[in-house]
Image (tube, rainbow, N blue to C red; front, top):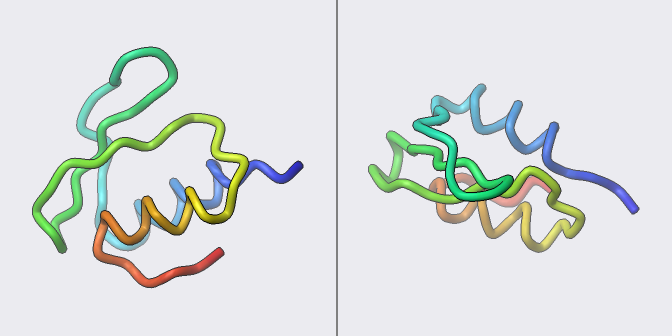
Amino acid sequence: MTDYTKDLKKYLHKEGCFLERQGKGDHEIWYSPITKIRFVVDNSIKSRHTANAVLKQAGLPKKF
């Protein structure tokens, strides 16, 4: 099964989002300057639907 985490984080960083802090377990808290909200990114995203949901929270179009 494909792991989307590396590509997702690279794309988020390229679009101006940044890691704010480590969350609980293997989660990270990211911030989007587009939507001005914080959102959670898991360190093992196996579903393209989950990866696209994270992009939606960041205010970015679907990519996966």
